[in-house]
Image (cartoon, rainbow, N blue to C red; front, side):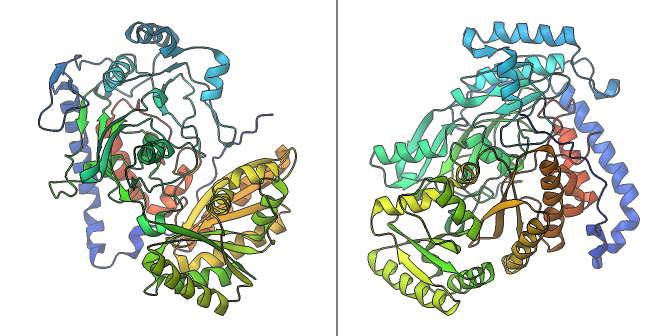
Length: 559
């Protein structure tokens, strides 16, 4: 059975962000002039974009400054903005585009128009937002291939939706109703260069983060890439959603400096590399971060240079508490001690999540059903021992009933896998149930209040749910809410809506790491303010005036 909800709602009555300005309030008087100026700038950028000359492609493996240039297409486009509102391809134009894609990608397996496959790629088993099947799936193997695909898409005005790991949860890869090209990047999965002395590597965007780390381990290179979102996530998707993961306590998120540069195919077919491989640079606007969190709406990331970190010995420990409040309070005290830098991860699993883990039958022994923290402590043996003593002392002061280390590497791996596979455990814990997974994030001090109010709301709504969270780096938690029929699905949707507005009211965000996609668009104005969202839309219109790059995602409005 396929469940899907129309997620459109009435706008919430949040306070506009501009109302809190004080010295800048005088700027409001000039906002109409600013709007006119932005409009003129946008018009100028579109004219430049259209008439800036032939598309230039950079050879993907060459460093910036040593690129070769290749003319691949003209920029004269029918239906562009100066001729009125852009429209997408007619059915006949779409079929012609598909034929040209098949001709351009000579391998017969590089394109697929099987209706069942198109439907599968256009939806997700774990997303319940509106979705449409794609019109064709294409599988490029190089940046050159992506350029050819983008040029054909632009020529016929066919939306392009990037796809690779298929682990996203907010409808990021759903098809466009008028027809769309699904750009399956999973064949672009090569590690191109490893620079051990510089602690970085260059790879294509379809590489999975686990494969990067296993390759480094197999080669005996004592480095790893620390961003660790859901199993199966690829570098392109991690960049697109601005991902995080359990290691964020020690290593931060995708919006840090872990992506030194990216190679991107823009909507006009040009290829850019956002910066060189130097570890730091203050040369102008940080163009790399422009594409982090953009979810494929500004261009297609084909390659990236990743910063690596040294592998440091770790130990895994578990502590159990009477309440979430006790657990979170203990974490904040621990991180504010001199031992804090030795904490690599701190993950929360609530009592229902612990019960679901036991019920799913994926563990070698059952765990006590209590609110639980899992720690990874890193350092040399002396640092681990000292940090463990600090952690044990503080968790005891906050009511912990137990604090114990995993006795073997196998037990440590199982403990951590239980957290990483929380969704699987939640699904398997109740026969016939489906699961809606969502995330929000608030300042850490407000997390206990948010979790308490959310659990109370779910209980009052008679919904079964588990909660997991990243409580060391941020007040980021995930609610995994179970349902079996359309009535329960409606109740789940309403509960998610209340949870998001509850987080925003606590000075938080509608998404800590899942991204916006389709599911979180309606909350952007409440969270960021109308002017901030309009600036995001202005950037989108300037770079992608035909709106062919993953339309309908991220933007709060479509104009």
